[in-house]
Image (cartoon, rainbow, N blue to C red; front, side, top):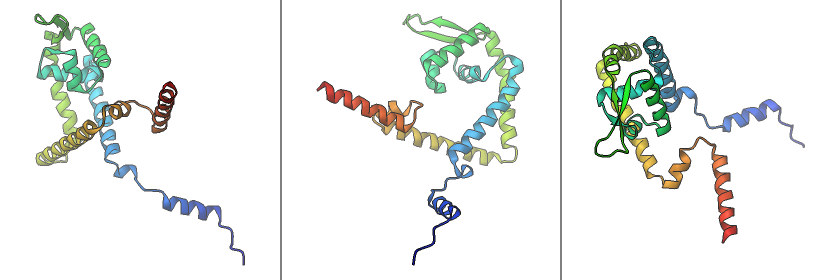
Length: 198
């Protein structure tokens, strides 16, 4: 006796049951990203009246903590590529917030130094930033906030270690915004070129 053909609904249900489940509300990465976006948007609204963009903000924060950093040091502190850092420095320089000073011992180095205008903004903007964080955590205790910061710190260290464990080639590929398929295809083409050259 012939078996009855399965309906499209039954096939879809079976396929759906086999699909691994990872909803967005259970994704730590997604939740951190959405929280970060909301924090940035709220902060942007607060600092815009002072002529400060988010692109400037993080560099100003680093300079308020330690004035006179070089472009490379700023890039490492903020986690940006040097061209992005240079763009922000030039923008802040045009706004009269920083000036670049050549290193007396090593003329190749330029230190980024706050102007009086840039330094004055610290007292005006840091309370706004604290207010943004307070708005996000107003229903949490100080102890809970400290635990959250410790947890985030551990997560960052875990991921930093994983990245450092990668080989130099893999780390380079992982840093590029391309799909795994493109990476795989590019590697295959590179291997074929190498085989032909031998």
